[in-house]
Each structure stands twice: as structure tokens, then as C-alpha cells.
Length: 471
Ligand SMILES: Cc1cc2nc3c(=O)[nH]c(=O)nc-3n(C[C@H](O)[C@H](O)[C@H](O)COP(=O)(O)OP(=O)(O)OC[C@H]3O[C@@H](n4cnc5c(N)ncnc54)[C@H](O)[C@@H]3O)c2cc1C
Ligand SMILES: NC(=O)c1ccc[n+]([C@@H]2O[C@H](COP(=O)([O-])OP(=O)(O)OC[C@H]3O[C@@H](n4cnc5c(N)ncnc54)[C@H](O)[C@@H]3O)[C@@H](O)[C@H]2O)c1
Image (cartoon, rainbow, N blue to C red; front, side, top):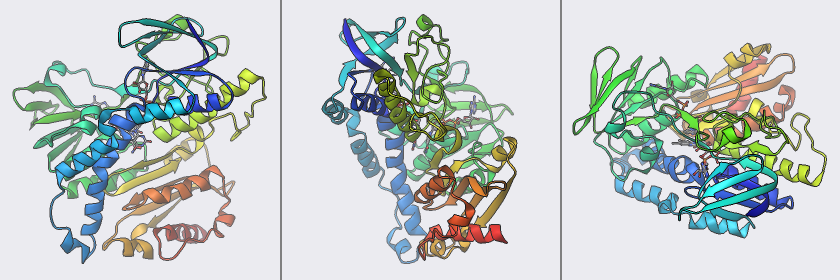
């Protein structure tokens, strides 16, 4: 039996960060990983998807500039894009991340881990052995999510793509059907269309990116259509069959035929086979935690859950943020050091509730932090939306001919601070962190007047938003 201060289940970005912070706080840490150290993000999510998208964005940007347009007339070289994607995933080998983990002083245990009562983890190792790990202080579950597939008869037999195949495919399918209107669906429709697939995107609802301001989804829809994606709203898939190509039946009776079909229909927490029932929790559900990461409904204060698996914010940067904070909490509690649990304190993940940033890497990009107008109003804030057309900003018109984009700040009228900001347009991804700082630090509008944006950058939109607010 092996004993450690902390046992971490899952070596994705969250588990790595949590383990590192707990170890930096003076604790011995074992990290259990059943697949690749680095997790979904490194091999089948953020990194490969952005590696597929970036060349498409660069080419689209060049085509919006006379002079550059003439030099950028051809199609993307799909083989070169896929080869660069393979470099970013280290050809699905994790040696580099294993080296980091060991250099950080963490002990890697390969295999599938399951809880087996309080502070006990049983690992089924790849060579069939059963290894028991016990934790003196804490077990942290950082097992992430897996793709959710709808219950459609015969779905398994058509071998649908999930986000894994959509990010790792070595071939460009001539025809790709994408089911879903969320982030994965929009990004992957953008990428594979740019790589040469004929793409049909089937959206059950009436808009894209439903968690963002409505204008973001509208602009992304326009961008997809302009790129040649056949985007259909109100289209539910009711049947699937493969007979060479895949045929999808829609609820109105129409059919769609494609070489591959991607179901980008959300995620489920990876908790089905984790032994949660041995500690009194339900399998297959997110592990609910307090803002210090401690799991609700487990006595003794030893079980933590961080990252996608707790359902707070399914993003790598938020998982890493939780990992840093909860890892520190575990070390502080073990040493008997006091926590700082006031809002925005060292020991709580306050940003999860108030200021989650996200960039959707479509063309145009959509970038948002904090609350939308609708969310802010629903939460009872007295708010005003301040809107500005990004195309009127000098830096944006230099960035691309015919630049189209939009910005919205949601102002809390009682405190005169910002509750949320959304940008949509080419190149807005790098603008988002300015908004994240304004929302997180609750910078008063009166002080934002002194944050002078450089001329002529797209950031001048900040000045235009303030002028619009002042009237
Ligand atoms: C296509 C796609 C693109 C994305 N792009 C972005 C993006 O651009 N930016 C962004 O912020 N987010 C993005 N995300 C979301 C991001 O991938 C996740 O938020 C992130 O990976 C969560 O990290 P995690 O460490 O919590 O979980 P994961 O990365 O899922 O890691 C969990 C790890 O736990 C391991 N594991 C699971 N069960 C066990 C077990 N029982 N025993 C041992 N090990 C186990 C898994 O093998 C895995 O390595 C994207 C997601 C998808 C699907
Ligand atoms: N750039 C990024 O930050 C990035 C990129 C990709 C993914 N992610 C994260 O990963 C998570 C997963 O993304 P996702 O796009 O898979 O999930 P999502 O929840 O964002 O979108 C799922 C979509 O599928 C639809 N859907 C669900 N069931 C369906 C069904 N049976 N038939 C048709 N449509 C159905 C939903 O209505 C929704 O539009 C998200 O939380 C996202 O934040 C982030």
C-alpha cells in the first residue's frame, strides 16, 4: 500500500496545476492518469482545435486586405495544417508532460483510479495490477468530461465523430455533418470547412452560442454562411444509418448525407466509473463543490473536485485557476494555516461565479467575460447595455477592409462598474483580457476614462464605449 499526503485523479490541466500547488505547499502528491498526461485539452480539445483553426483565420485575415489578398489566393494546404496540428499534440505522446510532472516532484501512477471509501483509491494499472493508494489529507478528483451523445437508435453503428475524432482526424472528409450549435460545433464547422469539407451544420434551436449575447451567435452564423457552411436551425436529428456514407433523418422528414457526422452535443462528467458510491455520492453526475473545492455531502473534509468534473465552468483556464486555488487550500488545511475565504480571497474561486472569460475561435471570433445583459437583469442588477459598432473604430478599419464587429459592455448602474463585456469581430481574442481585468477588479467607469487605449488599435473601442455611456 502506498501512502501520500494527496492523491489526484486525472492529469489534465486541472490535475497538473492542483498537484503542483499542493506539492509547492509542502505535500507529497501522487497523480493517477488513465490515458495521457495533459488530458483532453492537450490532445483532443484546445490545442489541436486551435492548431486547425489558426491557419484558416490567418488566411481569412489576409484576404480582407488589398495587396495581401492577391498573395493569398489559394486554398489552405490541408496536409500542412494537419501536420502542424500533429506537432501541437506531440503526436499524441505525453513524454514532455511526464518529464514536467516528474521534475515538479510529483509521482505519476498510470491506470484507472477509483475511490474505495474515505481517502482510499484503487488503481487498475495497464499491466493488470491493482494498486491501493491512501491519502493522509485529501483526494482531488480532476477527471474532466467526455462527449455526450444523444440516444438515437443505431448511433454506435454509424461510428459518429465526437470532439476526439473532430480534432484528431488525419483525413479531410469530403462531406461533414455537424450536429449542435455550441462552441465545439461552431469551431469545428469553421475548421473543417476551411480545410475543404462541404459542411452542413444542424442546430436544434434557433441560435448559435446560446450562452453568449445574441449578437455574438448571429455574427458567427453569418460568418459560417459566408464561408459556405449550410447552416440549418430548428433541425433535430431523429435517425441515423451508415451505408458507406452516413444518412441523417431530420424531424421534418428531410435527410442529410455526409461522409462523417460530428455530434457536438455537450459533455458529461467523467464520474460514472469512479467509485463515487463508496463515499456516498451519485455516479455519473458532476461533483458539487464549495468555493474552496471541497465536495458537498462527504464527511471528513477530504474529498475535492476541480475542473470540468465539478461543472462550474468547462474551460481549461478556469480548471487551472481552480487547480491553483484548491491545491493551495489543501496545503493550507493540512498545515493548519488559516484560509482567506472572503470574496476574491486567496482560498476561493470567486471568478468562477463572476468573471469567466471565453474566446470562441470562429471567424469572426466571439469573446466574452462576466454576465450578459439578460443574465445580469435576471440576477436583479440595475443595468444598462452600452453598444458600439467595432467597424467604426479606426484600428479595426485598418485591421481589415470592411471590418465588421460589435462590442457590448453591461454596466451596473448602482456601482458604475462593469458586470460583463462581449466582443465579436476579427482579432478580438486578445482584447478580452482587458475586459476580464475591468470586470474582476470592478474598475469604476470613472477610472476607466484614465485607461487610455493606444491609437490606432481595436482597443480604442473602450473609449467609444465610455463616450456612448456618457452620452
Ligand atoms: C473540442 C474542444 C475544444 C476546446 N477548446 C477549448 C479552448 O480553446 N479553451 C478552453 O479553455 N477550453 C477548451 N475546451 C474545454 C477544455 O478542453 C476543458 O475545459 C479542459 O480539458 C478541462 O480540463 P480538466 O483537467 O478538468 O479535464 P480533462 O482535460 O478532461 O482531463 C481529465 C483527465 O483525467 C483522466 N481521467 C479520467 N478518469 C480517470 C480515472 N478514473 N483515473 C485516472 N485518470 C482519469 C483523463 O484521462 C484525462 O487525462 C475545449 C473542449 C473541447 C471538447
Ligand atoms: N474556445 C473554447 O473556449 C471552447 C471550445 C470548445 C469547447 N469548449 C467548452 O467545452 C464545452 C463543451 O462544448 P460543446 O460545444 O460540446 O457543448 P455546449 O454545451 O456548448 O453545446 C452543445 C450544443 O449541443 C446542442 N445539443 C445538445 N443535445 C442535442 C441533441 N440531442 N441534438 C441536437 N443538439 C443538441 C445544445 O443545444 C448545444 O447547442 C463547453 O462548455 C465549452 O465551453 C470551449
